[in-house]
Amino acid sequence: RLAADQRFWQDAAQTARFGLVSVSLELLLALAIALLLDQRWRGRGAVRAITLMPWALPTTMMALGWRWIFNTPYGPFEVLAEYLGLGPLDLLSTPALTWLITVLADVWKTTPFITLILLAGLQTIPEDLYGAFRLEGGSAVQALRRVTLPLLTPYILLSLLFRLAQAFGVFDLIQVLTGGGPAGTTESLALYSYLNAMRFLDFGYSATIMLGGFILLMVLMLAGAVVLRMTGVIRSAES
Image (cartoon, rainbow, N blue to C red; front, side):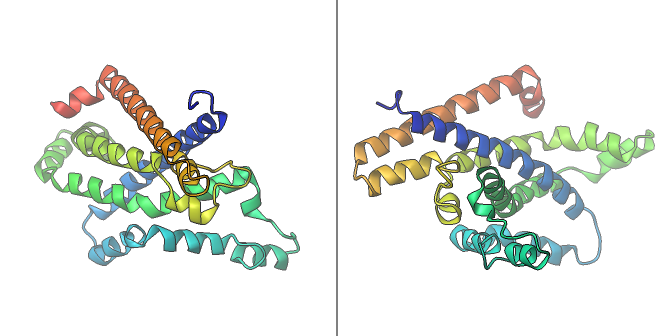
């Protein structure tokens, strides 16, 4: 039944796409923010605390906030569009835009989590290494490529492991922000499993969906590990 369920495969593809895009954006943003917060400047402690605030907020509250921002006709974007004479945008009714909004909300919420991990990794890199590298004539960009990123690789892999698992099981953000709509284009595997259990009372098939999602996640993780090992990233992290 699961193998022939087109909705399951559609939701699996949507969940995988959501996870890969959102986690990739989060990693890039988190690396930039962590590098900034690792520098010494006045007010750094306060900025670090503020940076972690989105991650500390409950996901349900955060999703409600994003839904209000893009609400038709009372959200700020819709009010501004009406003021400019652009008419109602109806952003949460357009599949492509709705998907981008869910990715944006997830990136805003969980980038601080990866930032915290990467910042902890940066704190373990001795300053002497950068000093020696500068004495040899190395630039800041070269130091990033040859010192920072290789030593930060284990922390990057750890954050990717956590976030991919979390993104593949996304539920509350989608449920509150879009409800899986429009027309199921943002529905995740976790939401599909929830609907089978709570709406259709098919608890057995709901558990099967989650088991199938777990197997797919493991396949993706193993495939990613193979690619990383072939490119030498894991070997450099182990060494």
